[in-house]
Image 1 (cartoon, rainbow, N blue to C red):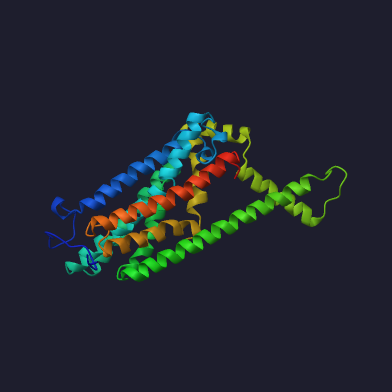
Image 2: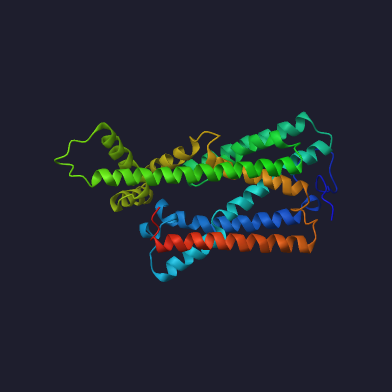
Length: 318
């Protein structure tokens, strides 16, 4: 089947406003709802357990077979995937808003509506993050939403190419960062193996020790540090607010070009491409979606299954 440049629009009103039931794309709504429930499944861990327990059950949650099995299953099915799907739906939704506005003859009005909507989302995200839960994604979504406006007229192929390039650079940056962390810890342990009481450390060794201690604190927080974190959240609201503010500020202070944010932006661009090509609107054949599902599942389960096997085998050592 052909790939239209934009999804068909039905029963459009003359001015911008809330989308009526007849105008909604049920395929987008269904996939968005699926992803949202999947995100809830992933976030439940950090609603009730320390942040470190999200990827390491040794830091909370239990290590019995049932807990480990549940963690492995949830990670293979949901980790990274639900956020990716939801990001694609966000990108598609932004493009849909802009396309519909432009087709109705809007110009400045469309841009005004889009940016007001995005800034309100950013405000809601900040309130949610600082006063309710540190893992909020509305703020970074709004931040990336501002960038998406620049891609509103870009065609399918450049969107896919840009998304792929960003994912490649993101992967390279994360792999490089992890190798750097591993090397930092190796050098730290080499210095620690010395008799520190009788050895005069060089400037380089002191720097290795200092850098390593900081990295070890991040990767292997002590039981006392984790308990303090839990107590602050279980204490009065002032303590709760202070503890959450530290985590939120680390996230919100990242520069917009920081690779982690590319995770969201690359998926948003891919969502825009899939909307323009008719994939997200259900316009492709059953065989197309069948092949897409089979290839994606085979690759995804193989890669994530291997990853989780290695994590369990090495007792979740970062």
